[in-house]
Image: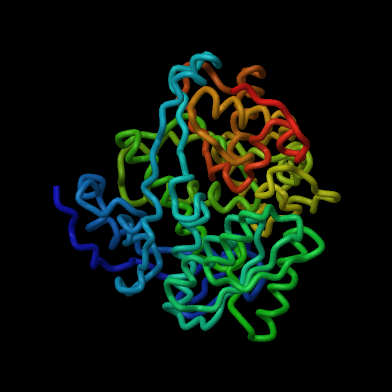
Length: 411
């Protein structure tokens, strides 16, 4: 089948605050809600979108996230610049599933995205939209992958990219961001410290801030993972989704996507997946808030984990994450770094996948949920493998190689 022309209109209508529900115009550069400084969410005329965005039409559309252009915010088709992001594979993890007693264990493999992670989805849309609205320079705090993705899409638009990252960022991330033309500042601190510096520069008018959920459109790129799951499962939904959660944009985005599909009249959305937020025990503000029944999360002190993407002490969208967990009947769970490291090797040795530590955390969480009876053996379970492991290469090496000491090998 030949792909159709994707010169279709966005049905973007307005922005709505996720906290106070105030309504704001969509066609100007905007960060947080002017009334309460919480995240703004893009809203669409879903009746209009549903006229052309129907499940039967999707096989004729390009195999990237712009196949859902009606419910994405970029209005001008020529500014929907793409490196091939989205439409990643759903893998049936047969060997791991058999070991865990699961017949229906799947992984959404996001490592095939540009720059090797799911961050490409969000930054593709956020950067395209920022360029459409007149941004002249962009800045972002990053634990690694988001910086690389922002640099890539900024390069496509010829926009200066300023990246703030913790000084202990693994070197492969720095090499990638440098190669993509970014200006990098290393910070003695965590991603929250980097975010404060980005915010200060934005307030001075030096750039537009594309931090997680501090502008409305990264979540729109991430939500396409939910639309793709609908396609993968033939118009149905899995029972359980395990999602590694730092800022939580992907989890919030998928929950938003499921509601949009239902409002457009797509069948099979009455039963939606239980959303499971997975964090590291060294930085688990969402898990703690969930266990305490809180609506928001207290910032985590002394955050430390090998999973850099999970080292997010405070998420501006914390209430949206917790809301999605409650509405879905899901939960939140923290896992230990030693178990994450072991799960990286287990996933590689059994399924041929070298995954990032954030991704491996979902396997650890699944094993704990099965043992607790919170996931049943007959359920369809999806692990989100949010990125590949090469940039964390030392975590996949034996101890003597990871530390640089000598070792023996067999010819």
